[in-house]
Image (cartoon, rainbow, N blue to C red; front, side, top):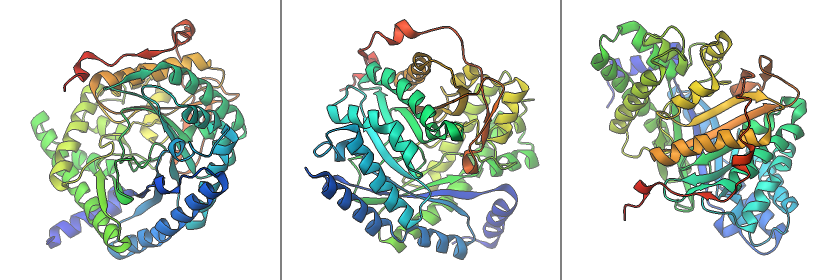
Length: 454
């Protein structure tokens, strides 16, 4: 039972430091919706999403009102759609019809995003996988709520470089088709290495085939709470700083645990995991970069930034796993440029470069996230950036991801505006030297030797 001090402290975290439950995400298996008829498959998919998640938004709002805990997003993730459409889709356009069916069902139930327009191709692509990837630009340009992801690598299998090459081209085409809105379609497309089956955060969420028929996963977020704790208490040496971050992460996670269990009970859906990720927003004071600066850095990106982020990420995990028995998803500190106001400021000040962000991804979740780059960046260069990030994930046995936005018609120094939680971003400079011949080799980068543990 929480005592009055704990209740008052939680209220202060909500009122003064932007503590919230970032998302309640219902995972829904669509395996029983597959058939050899496209119209029947689309109908079964839409019906299942509506029936399983029809009360998700209302339930989330009721919990927020009753407990006084903001629940920012209510979302759905589904089985990777390339698997569901394999028996009935004969062309990329057929997959787009499934995207429309999902988008209409998502709009009907009022959720923010639906993830799972996805393919898992870390060792190779089936014909269905290839068709889904080919359909992504059209699907994302014609829908409002659908999010897409493709897992192109893993520690166990290596990196499918044919898929990496194809995704560079796919991102460019998506940018062009959504050029009237600063290429926002690319903000709904993530490329993964070691993608988890239970991630509640968009745009990379999908419902893995190892999951139950339906499940509730919750993502908590409280970068402002951590920053405020460090500023108020000074935190002394590194040992004291670690203890403070760990204790704060414990408190944040307990809030998420409460909401997750209550949502599970009310929806009569099994509780899956709590994702511990510190996910920033464009709101002032709700920034991971602010935490790093509160630790003593003049600007995020200064020497010491990677070490500070490693400390933060590790202590968040240590505190969180003591607060919940079921921790999963990504569980770390996100460093998206467009969604973190102080990260934006660091880029504008020249303290943060694309290369420094890549170095930081070695020690945190998830990767190069929501980064605007010049619209004329070649597809091969985008593929090269993806390959670098996938290699970090593969070698370090961790999840890494890339969400790049080549903003059509804009150059380095311009600003791209996406709105809402997606925020805005300065367009960052990209290394001008070519990797085209490297990407054109094709094939697969093999798994590292430490993957063979059986």
